[in-house]
Length: 122
Image 1 (cartoon, rainbow, N blue to C red):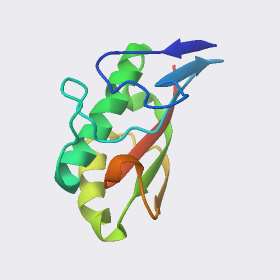
Image 2 (image 1 turned 60 degrees about the vertical axis):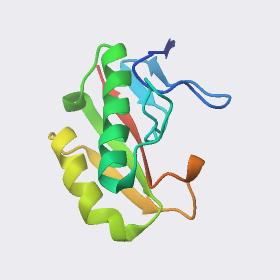
Image 3 (image 1 turned 90 degrees about the horizontal axis):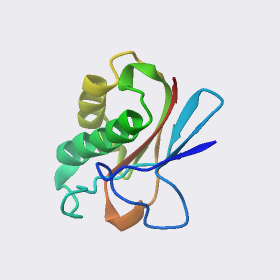
Image 4 (image 1 turned 180 degrees about the vertical axis):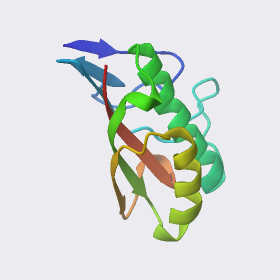
């Protein structure tokens, strides 16, 4: 197993890693809309969806992987009313249409509106 760590995605804010590579797979931790260069949170669902996807992309890149190798994502939304807007932005990154679960949750870390995690094959 190899730990994935990059300064191009937010550092872990708890006892976990940005991602792991094991047996030909890349597993990312859930990424929220923290802008890694500033530590600030993007504002609004559109900006947050973009930032979550960019953070996933940075972890994938650090593992020598890319969006087109993602086979499964799990998406968390604070409000399902944001689904259509989130979905439109998500589709621009995950063009290979990986398997996906998308659920509404009561609350996400730091009060963000969305979070995305991914599993990719190398």
